[in-house]
Image 1 (cartoon, rainbow, N blue to C red):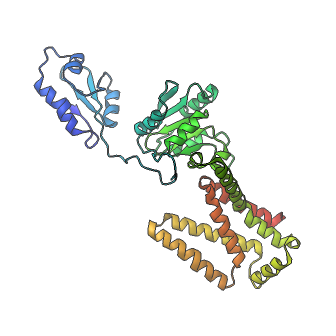
Image 2 (cartoon, one colour):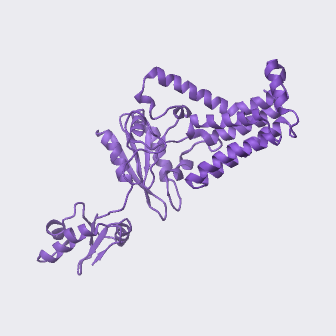
Image 3 (cartoon, helix red, strand yellow):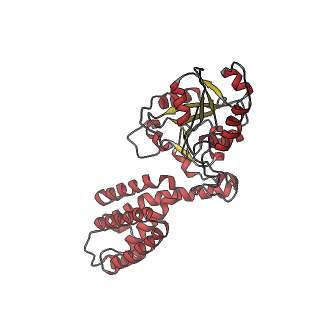
Length: 378
């Protein structure tokens, strides 16, 4: 009697490598060992003696064979699921360098890392997390390079996780973070095997979760987000300059709206006279004070961003254009907001994406600095 979940296994292999041999080959006094040696042709088949193991094997997409009169079963790994092919990830496109990206299969992702690290120093420990999902999680590190104390700490943290299910690697992030009272990232992530391998060669630990194309790395430093997957395949002088531009972009994205409000309210004497005259002309007759105006524009842009993000692809593009151009232009002409405020917030919003992985945190910091600038000045 063969148990399996339909559409989870390769039925052609089941017929050729299990059912046909069972019909054709005759074994006197059959035992599990004899059947495994002489009949079953599936590599990796093994004996199971517990019903819980049989249930688990069937639910994982394997075939389990029971024989009348024998108190154990045989597990045949015939899993076959439709999977996404390896391709360049949309968030980590490169001009030079490898274009392989992780997929949603933990075996494929592990093999992509192992292919680049053909060494016995590469250690892999597999755990199962989730009461219902039983999600496989691989902890990978280089034994000669990684700090043993850090490796042990990460293993202990993951083993202590008690949760109903793990659908994606992000589910583990909260458990791996040490400081719960910070808005900044404490766990790295990447979609490309070359990036993960480079981080492992620096002593980091990679955490691969089944069902997720994102691999986590710990420990993590904030400055890692100033790096890009294309950086290591270009000249050092060019990349050093680009990283300074990114840092400058992050700075203005956070503090530019707050500085604008602070200068208008408290420090207008530091503004050059010609620019001050232009500024006064643009804000003349506005119904809101500068502080309220800036907060209004920031909230307006955040609403547009969230709406365009969740709309279907082409509608989202249209909504972004209509919202930014028509709505912004109409609000300026109606005398509700000033052109400099729109320009400042737009420039700040664009600058977020010099480091897209930190855009959520930078958005919060922008609001915080605007509140500080509007209440206390520079």
